[in-house]
Length: 113
Length: 113
Image (cartoon, each protein chain N blue to C red):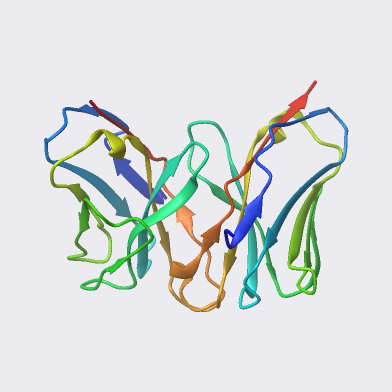
């Protein structure tokens, strides 16, 4: 059981370029999330999806977009990357029912120059 | 005032020591309380999950919630070098759908052999 996979593991990107971070889960979880983690700021929610076909904005959504075409995949797109988007990005999922807990992927380290 | 406050440390203790990690929060609507452990360059993993006030024990780990004081703690007994990680507290408004999880910024713990 892989759980949550993220790709790429790391990436260096020129400012202004478009980038899609991939996230796939094999737990058939309904809910998925994207966070960024920055030193001194902790984990901050970017976007979430409670179920396939629906998405919502988190604490820091500007400059990011997501889609949820199916249960397993939840890609995060930076349309035009800026240096302030340099961060570690974590995808997470949860069942969406009852006493829920979130399971995290290994992260993507993104550097925007 | 942030909803969840957590001392970032770093905290350095000798092997075998008892470790106390703490978070305070301001929103009395939080009902579910979690502790995540994050090793360097890895995603957070769920360590403990408690509902409402009281204690919960799992091996060397004890989670404590005091809702009257809006204060939660994680105790680690007989700490080991393998416990060296960043510990994040997290809180949820309700058990149904964790997209409302609010994280502390994390406390970095080092256990010295």
